[in-house]
Image (cartoon, rainbow, N blue to C red; front, side, top):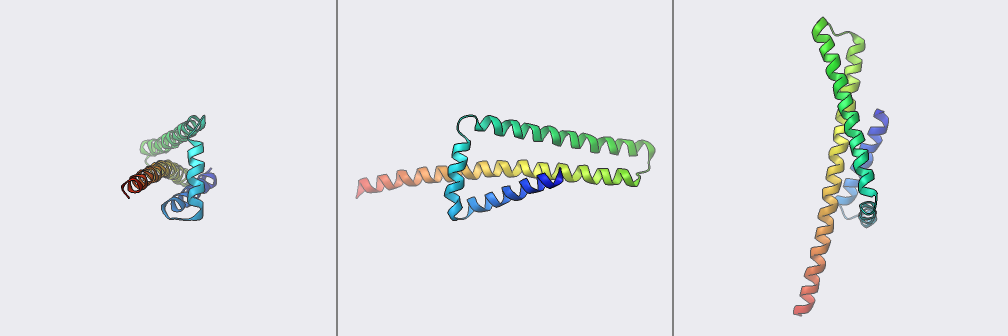
Length: 129
């Protein structure tokens, strides 16, 4: 599970870097995101995000259950320590992935708005000259 989420996080980070800087892939990514936001794309993205939230809540619940078990017994054995570290790593990676998805969405909206404003200004400048 952690390997999959790590690959997702790394690909999201690469996409953010490609969106922030003028690269040849920037237009391709923006067009791809535009197409993704049409039709059934938003529904699929929302369902994937909801699934990730459920997995995040489950991992948090499991971590809280381990903590509750150790609070009753007072001793944390090695297996529980490993399970707790695994759950905390999963939750942090999934939370970071959801945060990066929000960043990608906002950066995409800003790029589209900037492009729209530039075209409006160019049209007005052509009318004035």
